[in-house]
Length: 153
Image (cartoon, rainbow, N blue to C red; front, side, top):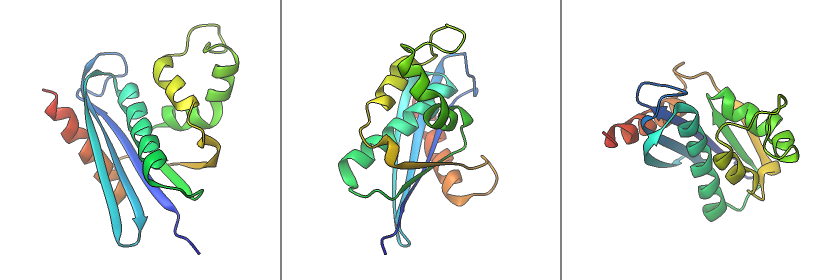
């Protein structure tokens, strides 16, 4: 029995704004086995919180693409925006030419288009985890993202 790869992602934007552009960061914590954890983060000079959350997801996808050849991948996120985007909205956005149901353009379409071309997206299991609730792995991803955001100051 193989151990599923568990990935915790988080984005951070100084000021936590969904509209104001500030320095941000993305953090990823990967539990490869009971005894092995991989951490990665990136600093994002000018971003919003939603974009930072998406960048964390894209960072995780990039790591999956280069390091893991397993179908047992679970990604945990405290962002309903990322979770609902991947599991509910993405298919319709793509089908509707990157327009929302009201005909307006999809926000952050450039990043969502990157998500949409990941060939193994259907193999991922997405799960929501409540942020700042004591989940050790989520807290690690949050700290990585926040630290990366501070580097952009």
